[in-house]
Length: 194
Image 1 (cartoon, rainbow, N blue to C red):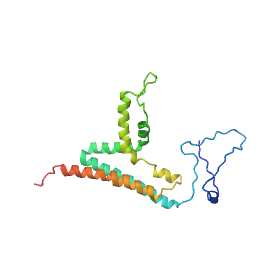
Image 2: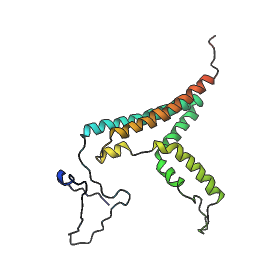
Image 3: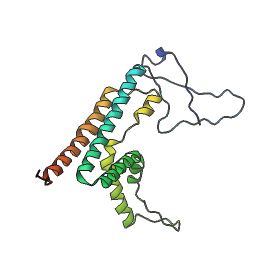
Image 4: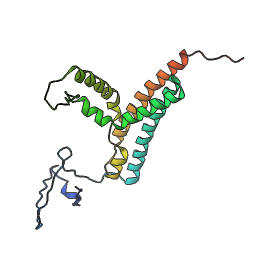
């Protein structure tokens, strides 16, 4: 499965805001054509230069790095170095598998019977469902489209989207981590100089 791109005149999308696209296979050999039910067809219009979009993608990656730096500093203030490294790596892994966490959190049956027989939700399903829903509540706001993927497919990263990333990743989550680490360091008894 590949992606087919067709160029069309820009004035075809102007006017009523409705564009009718028809597909007809004129080849001699039968061909299977499928359209992604989640995304469907996309009409991409020129909106900004590649350089401006690249700058916004780099800013989005900088916001994510700022969040991971705040996570590392907070873990370093709470735990010893090996445990802090482990916590930071776990945070990175959870960000990468956030889509999987979201899909499992939406299921009613998580633990399947090894005999293959159908059953209703068990106590384990409720327990693991609550755990994955809690993970999804924490990690869910941090997930979003990958800026590099948006950049390679030529999709615009708009300023409002970038602003929401800044508010969520840097201000909200980074601020919570900053307050937590400041509180922990304030409560610790520091050694006095001799």
